[in-house]
Length: 324
Image (cartoon, rainbow, N blue to C red; front, side):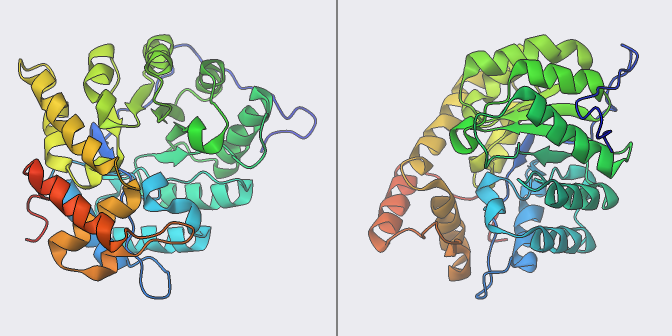
């Protein structure tokens, strides 16, 4: 653990220190979570959904924003992650969200992810207190890393300032990478600010830092700039097309493929995204359990359900292969 007498101390490593090669794919989904009647995660339905995503070339960022992760306790998330691994899903294709306001909760989740063999841990900054310093944020990440104390840990910093109200500066990322070059290995940037994303890629590329855009809207730009891919909400419903572009981003048709991805995303963005994606899964599987969201979120109204169905039909979209 970090010394109480010097809470912001930074360890330095040789400049040649670089992260291990990653088993994670270029595209991951913050997997939407089905809930049982008592509000607990339905691990069986979730495992089935995860397998469909894997079959379509998409990795598993379970317990991300679109997973309703912050409506779940650390205990629920650890138990669900254990159930997914026990169901035979490959942990080396997982980047579970482990960040929390509480250092104890973040440490518990991160330890579990490492113990179960996850290829990465996606860590929000502690988001309750606002206007905090880079020193404070560094101390948070450093204490979790030191408490876990495992060389297998691979941390991906999650920047989503429109939700957390805490922007992660490029200087902070550089500082974390310098102190923990084989542990702080990448980020998900959901800021929607392309100039910032590009700056992260350019400033940290020599360290092997892996930048994932937070939306497939930026997938092609990210790959062309030297990033590794995207972790995107609509990878939950359009996995095959998104992973296809990631695999063929240098093809002459790449811009047309990107336009097709944007068309699908634009439909879902017209609605509350989590509820809309769950509704699409529910309609495809004829399974009303998939419609459930945790308060304060609400399921789509009947009129919204009809509007979504019409809008998806108008562009000829369906969740390919999900029923099988």
